[in-house]
Length: 186
Image (cartoon, rainbow, N blue to C red; front, side, top):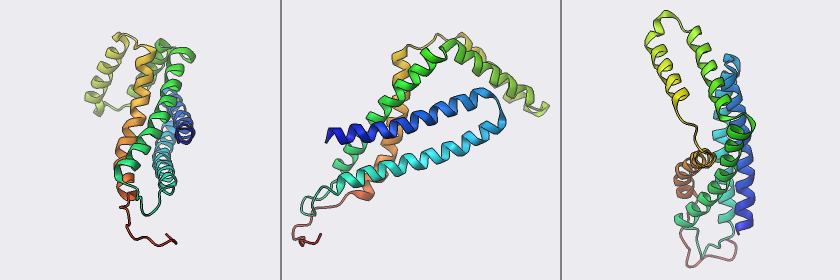
């Protein structure tokens, strides 16, 4: 049902939005320890994201009898709907964070300061990387701020992208053909 899809999408969205907030703050802090923790957190969240999508889709599939089966398209469609709801939550949080809470110009200024800190920590062997970082910072500072809507869609599509990729795997694993002569025990 749509209530179940919305509820599961909201739970997943809240987890992914909290993760994104932590990652943005950790990255913008410029502290290497927090950035290392951010990498570990990111791996944990990717695993949790996959696990929850798998679990939700498996629960949904359990509602279909052996005679009906659980075709790939039904599993994949369900998973994409959950991902879309989660993406809406993440997109809304991203837009609020970048435009209302922090402010886009402040976000970019903090990002540039973090990049400058990283460049200062680089040894002389990283001149080419430093030049690329410098060019990236200049482009970011000169770019026009995106609209709140485009920021929200950016956050939403990143979640949907993971849903598309994870969905192919999960739907393939959980799909089952109908069994014409299933026993009552199945």
